[in-house]
Length: 227
Ligand code: C5P
Image (cartoon, rainbow, N blue to C red; front, side, top):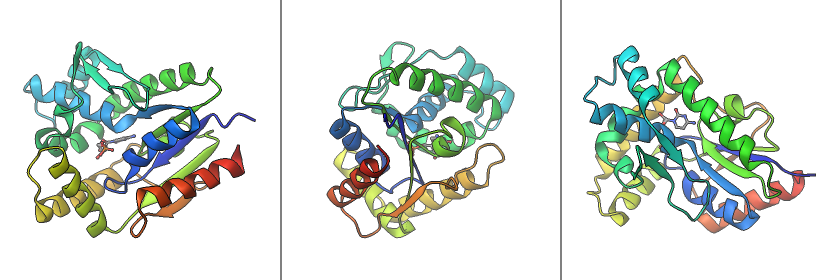
């Protein structure tokens, strides 16, 4: 049986992106980073100098934005209006505004439709697709063959995010990152539309004390059980 979609959800700093990409590569699957899509449209909102807390204005910008999304786990991920924005979307400006933009119902409608289209295209290939985000198991792909919900302590998540910032050439500030991780958790879990939550049928994996290799081993075991 084809596994189809592997849904990986959870808050930021759980190692989700790293393990999703690696899992996709190991399975010969394609890969979709839905967080990158919310980040890219947030960049469009910031570039348009629209207030991220004005839902109608935000929705208008997002409707006009041309988003091209790569699905190769090793490839460049995302283009906005023709240019690669993979780096810029990880910066503090986008990170600071993305939760407000992704709470707008019409933004989610547009991006979920886009995500389902990409998933539909990917599923014609036998390797399936690893999709990471916040609402993949609950909203985007409720029929996923395997759903995993990654967690980790807020401290561990802040440490990982800070290490990632430093390794990618940004300033690393543990206290600020800790505060940002908690702020985004509260916004993402508390919003009305598609809040961050574990699907009832998702496997929960706490990565606080696990390295990437250990998380991957666990995930591959679950894939083997379901596949
Ligand atoms: O995963 P990442 O940290 O890049 O996601 C950035 C933000 O995008 C999250 O904090 C959340 O507000 C939003 N997001 C979402 N739904 C998804 C993926 C991301 O609302 N499926």
